[in-house]
Length: 581
Image 1 (cartoon, rainbow, N blue to C red):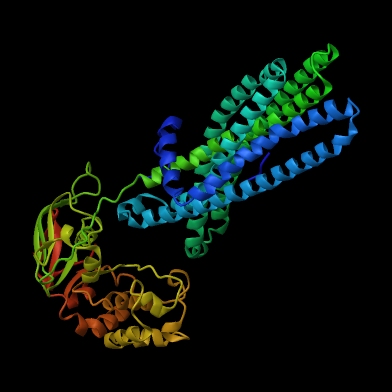
Image 2: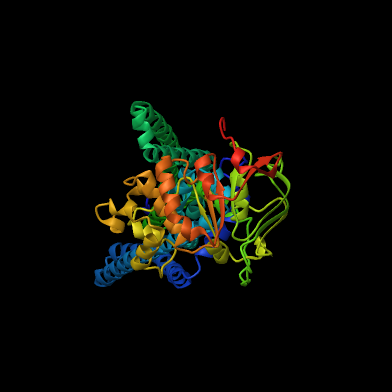
């Protein structure tokens, strides 16, 4: 038997449909098989040579026995032996070459598929990422795609190879003796029935395996990401037990799947042994009756032994398909998600940074109550405004709409008198920069984080913007200044340093519109005022929107608005009372 590398994904409760999956799976794999045509052609061509060798070797055995050993004509026996060795050597070489090509194709396909899945992932809307756990997504990209290796390396090339070999052997044996061929094929229905029955059980078991692995991956990632909170509240033992429980669930699911899979091959061995025994019994009777020669009997036995190798392979391919089917289901459930937000590629000219919301209504789900309703609001170019209000009233939602993380259900949003839907993505991202409460930092240097997404921005450019913003003191404290590595998500930095990076990262793009979404909520008020006072001069020609619940952040703005009855209402800046929010 040939060896091998041993909305939310799959959680929608839908009944698994194998026929439906076939079309979806073929479409996924077909698209990623492009470029593998030459290797596939060679691998399938080698199949003909391998199948021919399986039929020739028993015939050489028959020739050696009947024409030379029994007839005692030993002069030509050496040539038959040499031919036998030559055919066996060709079979070994072609089988090895075919295995190499099959695995090469499989690695190329899963690499291509993994890259395309990731590329698809980063194009999906924020709403998709909010509704799916990182562990689930990682599990699809890594574990489920890897599971497809065996399907591709065995399922395509070897399926054709084994099928042709079985047919060739059956036909060859039938030409030698029809009775023996029919007897040999008696065990086939048993094999087909057992394979189908166990395959159905295995498919269900593998679906549970994939789900449990995804849960375990999520649990581990969450605990590692939240290790500070775990240690702060002394929950190491509790979290360890939770991960152990998830690990046990994954172990039990894998053992169940393995147990089901293990049932098939002993049954196959038994069926093969019964078929071989019947051939020996019937062949022995025919030989005793002089109906067949000894060479034909030995060739029939050889064919019987050879046919069960490909049959076992086909059974393994079938179980491999059932194993991969669960992964293909999850991969497809990922790929079928499409971005709702689409950007035009043609450029537009934005005359200024005026923001207009015209009769805008929004809810995160269509059947939910609107967070904003029939909102009409204009922010003049260069204006400095603050938006306040308790949690959950829609402050951050307005920011997400202006930065086009979401589109409104109704109404139109314009910047510079151009609808957002007509503004190319790059232009919009360069024009509108959002500084969030907790910005994500990559595990590279400070200056590389600031220049993220700007390949032509040099270290000197970053140093200049830091000087212009007067934020040097936040980075001078670091051992290597802006060359210092920030660690995973900036774990080595203080809150002030993280926000200084976030502000510099936004300002290096020189945006016309700058939005601070609770950007200072985690900072000490003194640090907040230091950052704002240092950067205020460079913000004078920009449209500034500050979403906050702190009065100190409102010193930079000219007007203050609150969300009242799903609309923005201006309030007196001097009378802002935030106590209790």
